[in-house]
Image: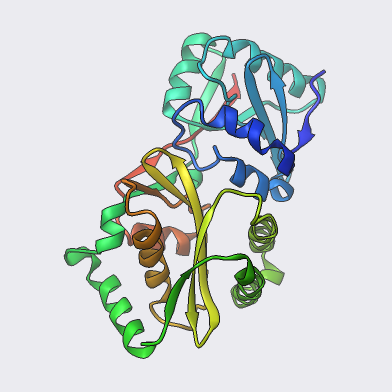
Length: 298
């Protein structure tokens, strides 16, 4: 039987070897995401031949991600072993975050084996970086107004890079955000808070870049992200003091302008089915969505 093990910092180089062999567009396909969300999703991994295989659990739903390899050659062997693992443990097989390309490949190498269902709650929102930096045109009029109001009310604000000495103030800001959002009544918010803290605690060992908004030398907003592929930046987290009008628009724009202007695309991850988050992400007019399917045995 396959043996899975939890994701640890020592796995970073191995994961990056597999995750950088091909162009992946889904936000789950980075070591940082898999590491920071490890406790929330019980993320574990194993190797099957030339494939990195990752499984997780959300409440009572067990699933695997599509196997990561340099090519799809031999992927059917890895998939069969994963199916066998689920059957041996009396679990229904489910593969999540299946891209359109992977769906097409599985339909060729495993014809008639799966039923594929779209999962809109985990579609990634992808934008043109230039749109989010310039905020040009009528459709971004409200965003520009929020920024102007912020700049008028807080003329001494500073945008600075995230550094180790700012980690603890960022965690304090994050905990305040969580309290205001009602963390004690929402397990998913607690999970998100703890995932971000896990990434912060490994700041020196993880390859991400962050930015911070300081007002009167206090951290009022932060964000961090990494290169998902050669032309796309992936935003892992973006939190701010919601009592300050316009601060989210400012941290979004400043982070991209200062750190990622060379990128063509921005992946701001999924909305998790949260209506307010969906409305916010749509308000920036995504260029496209990264469609993802779940695959279940027929």
